[in-house]
Length: 176
Image 1 (cartoon, one colour):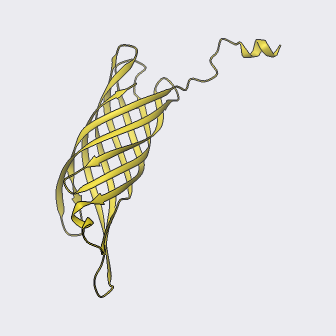
Image 2 (cartoon, rainbow, N blue to C red):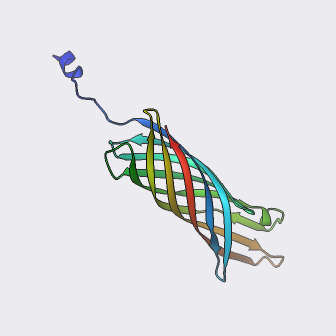
Image 3 (spheres, rainbow, N blue to C red):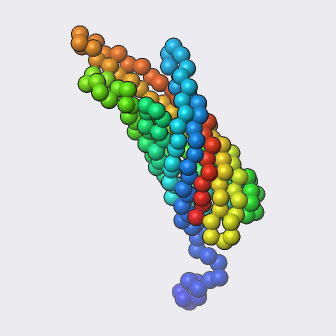
């Protein structure tokens, strides 16, 4: 009796592990209390995705985003939602996480500290199936990244400034 229940034709779980590798170009800027500074850079990231259904993927990932002065190492939770049940389909994506950061401009000073912060990145893309093994992903994503600069002067006064990065990234990736 127990053997019959285990040999059912229905799969126990639809979940499958997938891997997403992405590279891209990031454009946007840093918003401070006083002005906006244009930034451009490159990004690379890896996501381990669980396919929860034929159209929904959840995952966790990490990456590297490099600008002239700043470097961010994001660690995030990820979501991909395919809009159609086809091999070639548009999709929605979102990432929520935290980025560790460094800044070359401040790294030489003992009293300066540059910290990363929370990030949020929604996007829209298109999935192109390439055979049965992998798919090509092309997407455009908005990203909001928080960061902070902290400075202690010789009088022991501490100055803090919150920074906001508003960025658009153009990504190409592989879903394996």
